[in-house]
Image 1 (cartoon, rainbow, N blue to C red):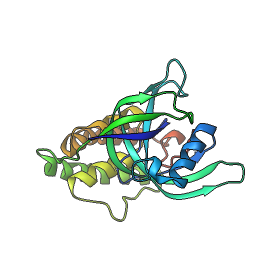
Image 2: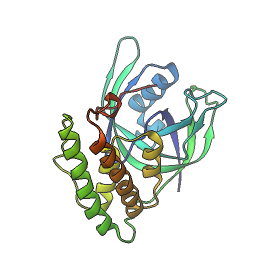
Image 3: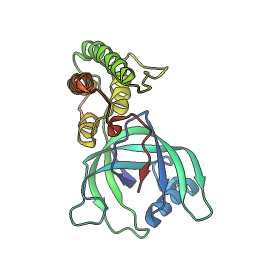
Image 4: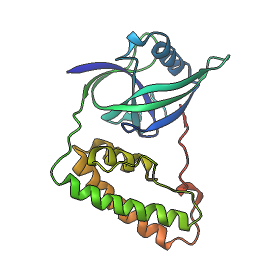
Length: 224
């Protein structure tokens, strides 16, 4: 069933269940946030869509290209400043496919016709979940060995579907890898991809005498 969503393009990837802080200062996205907060009926259940920018830096550039799969965002906390900017924290809801984009809405921000994607577990997910759980434990241990405070979340899930999203959101990898994880057809495929990435990262961490600053896990703050 199609859904029409306001779009908030970012140079990052949001996963279902993950939280993401946003600092909103560009005029068109201030209008988007105002619409979502003041009139939830303008969006689907008061949500908007977060979608990655795959090429370019600004929506509207000739080179800009949006990812085909994004995630709905639900505002958990919001602070509107006197100058009209916002500091908000959103939580990922449901994955969606972008079917078509309206580039010239009256308020300046993008809207899209989208289709929500099913969350399926997939064959072999339990075996992959066990493997990823072990690899992620090693990943955290090696980060700690390099002086980085890295602990699995207290409510670290064991079921394949939530585990696949938690690990995907927590790993420190580039946006392209994150997008592949988001687009996986089901939890088994996502966990299989995560296992490959975790093995790679564990090898890298083993070979590093000092962890470069860009690899340090830290909260993402997206400056639109």
